[in-house]
Every structure is written in structure tokens, then in C-alpha cells.
Image (tube, rainbow, N blue to C red; front, top):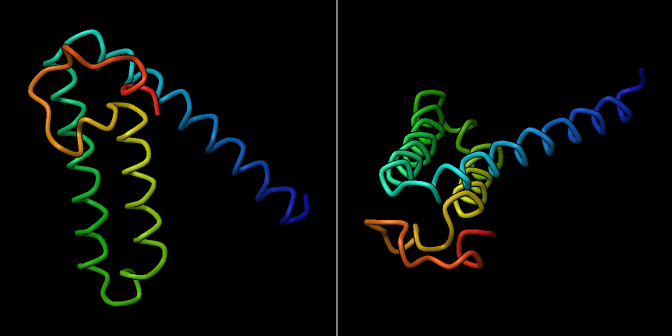
Length: 102
């Protein structure tokens, strides 16, 4: 298989996995404010892990790859939990579906 075709297949697979994950997390977050909090904490942990890996691996790891990974974590956080996460949220109550869906 040529490299370009393999890159496209891996990209499609990644997109599919992200879509499933975001929708599962969104459904869970909508169902219970405690789950919303746990999912929010997991996204915080993921961002911290990416940042810590960059610190441990030196300057070259703090490059575009790290920034892109953090950007993707943020996109998936917003898609899963809604924009309310950016200002903090104690409960999922009161959030409309337009805010939970990105």
C-alpha cells in the first residue's frame, strides 16, 4: 500500500474513533452532572499528560506536534462537554443542546 493511501486510511480511522468517543462522552455527560465532572477532569488530565510529555522530552517535543495535540484535546473537550467548560461548570443542568454539541 502506498504511503499516501495509508495516511488517508489512518486519518479516516482516527476521525471515526474521535466521533464515537465524543458522542459517547456527550451522552454520558448529559445524563449525570457527576459524570460531566469526571469527564471534564479526564480532559484536564489528558492536557496535562501531553504537556508533561513535552516537558520530559525537551524542546523538540514542545513543537507543532504538542500544540496540535493540545488543540485536539480542546476540540474534543468542547465537543463532548460544551463551551461551558471553558468558564467552569458545577452541573450539566441548564445547558441547552446547542451548547453541548459543538
